[in-house]
Amino acid sequence: MVEMIEGLVIDLDGTVYRGNEAIEGAVETISRLKTAGTKVVFLSNRGNISRKMCREKLSSMGLDVSEEEILLASTIAARYLQAHGEGRQVWVLGEQGLIDELRIAGVPLAERPEDAGWLLITLHERLTYQDLNLSFRAVRHGARIIATNSDRMFPGEGGDCIDVAGMIGAIVHATAQDVEIVVGKPSSLMAEAALETLGLPPERCLVIGDSLESDIRLGHAAGMRTALVLTGSTDLGAVRLSPIQPEYIWNSIRDVSSVLGIERSKMN
Image (cartoon, rainbow, N blue to C red; front, side):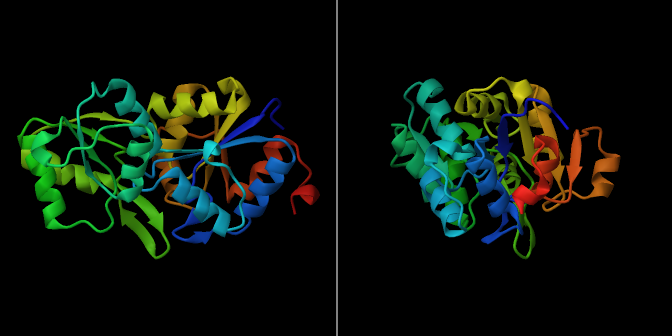
């Protein structure tokens, strides 16, 4: 048993759900942990949705959370541009959820790509040539590039799906301009926001996720303990070949009871 774990930093895609389907036992486990007083924050590289949209999705699965308990890459990108964007207008290669987060933060949005000082790239599941071309024009007119995350894939209902790396690759290769900052996991921006939300020191927190590169790497860099679940994009073969090693490897998030010292009978 690990002592003094008081807060959980929980990934969403591949840990709590796949696509629109909750992973078996995840919702019940998290609900009982919250009822028992464990502090929880959901930390996701999803940049194409807003916290409101995410809360509604979790609620539809039976999980009662507040928007304050959700930190998405869209949230952190909006906060970063609010603080460091120098008032420059932003052109978005992405979807409405990201735009909503930017508006909540008061970040100015460009009406034309030529007016943008920043191009913000995130997952775009309805991407068209026009979307790419307008973003291309923004960069050609001087916009600097920022991305919510650089993940290559995420676990969907029917299998792995291309993620933001695909959108980044198209723009970077076409413009010959690099991404200046990636705000999502495993960046320190995400870790710091999670710890601030929990109000706990890193040694009292545990990161639970399905990605070695984003979740486990973030936990290690921030001084948090880590648990990899096998319900998402990583299998045991990948773990054996990776230099990134979690403290725990679980079949699913249901195994969290073993490290929190909660009797399994109370979790079922």
